Image (cartoon, rainbow, N blue to C red):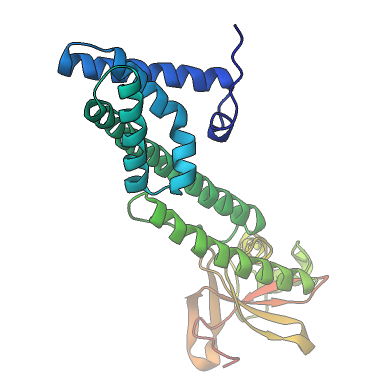
Length: 278
């Protein structure tokens, strides 16, 4: 005989067959519990089975309240036990125990699944941030991997992502070439026949790494001189040398740079204490 399940079964998210299997399993468990306690399993089987079948409806009416659900389950289980020839109290006890156990197990599974979902959300934001601005240092989080911890990560990464989008849009709007002009840069590379003093790199590669950082979201824009197409940029991943004999600076290591030009770009190491154009 075909059995069509509707109503409570449909609200569980399970197929009719899956729901029927769950009812059968819980019936067996209820019968076993009663058998261990009283030596018979028939009314325990009926009580547990009926309670499981009506659990979605009980949850719906109780709006997730465990106390209300436990009381309702006890009434249903006790009534079913009496109808099956058993005692109301025994059926109520079996049904209440079953409902409490399931409620605890379901909440644990929901909590575990929710934590995994939040972890995946945080990881997705981190990936998006890395793709948008690969040169930006990746934020490291410490602490237990809990739902609360992942919510903090998500909020932080969402703010980081918003800032990174604005920063990358600003850098893109400046129209700076992605490649160093070798001729212009050689004026700031030592040794080079074009070097004429001032800040310098030991090779062109150092200047290109600064420009790469600028375009990938690394470093920090400290200031701009729009009229002279100059960007003052701090980047800790490269080192140049500030050379200002008049001020007494000789081969001073620096992570502060001036990016000059737009289509023909050069990078000049400047005073590491540069602040607001000083």
